[in-house]
Image (cartoon, rainbow over all chains, first blue to last red; front, side, top):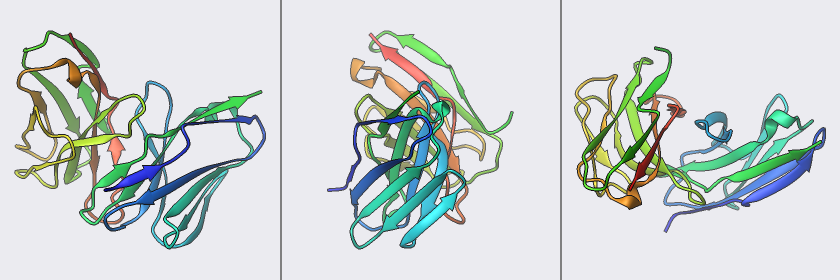
Length: 109
Length: 113
């Protein structure tokens, strides 16, 4: 079966760095997405990786290792507004997104 | 309209009633999707449409139907609602070129009693 695993919840301090991991087993791979979802709101796109390596976009970076079925989202200089759920999703061989349950990130002052 | 809109924002529905959730996008995206989101579970695909006039079944299609008469609209119908369909429903759309980033509507919170 297809499976996306990510931690349920993480806590970090304002100004610090946090890494959210995602492991996956899917039928085919056409890229991995990270989305941010604030409570009560819709998911919004953060990043896309299809090749191995690190993609940096401001305070957020995303890493992919296809051979290990592994990705992480790195958030630097954490701000209170980064408190949200972070969703990992893999595009499978049918070009459909398979979603993880999300990681709730709590930022403390 | 800017992006994707969904209606209603929330709804409480008696079991057995028929309900249509509306979704409209103005980005001229070819592909549209309906997901449900339940606590502790990832977004699950209900139905999708790659282009106007075509639809397909996702992971959890039972009890739901869709139509895609034109590019902009993608309504989701619950023919006879059951309590297990209590959920938050998100509509999304994407272009079919590139890496197909999906854009989401604000969601409909549905409670079936």
